[in-house]
Image (tube, helix red, strand yellow):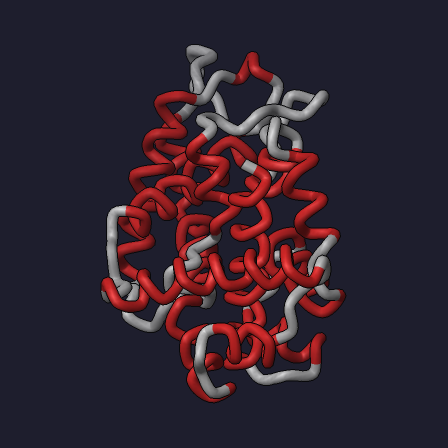
Length: 235
């Protein structure tokens, strides 16, 4: 890791962590709409790796691998955030879904059932499920986006950077978010844990829940709508 002069060998670190860029790109791609190019993610990840090389402070306590992993993933998320692949009509329907879920849960004092949400929106179940499929493409790792709005993730007591999820729930929004997750129906609560904490892909989650990947997408959209509705209502 160090040169003969006792300095960090950037060339060696770069070569050593190049495979990690591709691994993270592949892991992220499986959670994204089909049109996202793997090479674009890898290129963004390379920018993150180079940034990590410039910013890494060995005195901070975290290993370079941990620090670089965070920077690589963050650069990929930044790249994706600059894109806008959802039509305006789908975004409008996504907002309407959030508002509908909030109304129903305020009215009934419990998580709204799918048939209730579809009826409130004047849709058939088939139309409602299509809406969930459409809006799922716009829910790109929403917890990580919330982290990004708060600035740099915090560090653990040992000095190592926390995961995006852990960084979020350790901050000011912890209580509200955890209450919102706890209020989810059991299957959606499990999906959130598998997707954001265990970082399983849609196929793996489908195997755990015993449903298709398409159904996982629908349940994910529904869970995010519930969380957003509850967090917005708290504000």
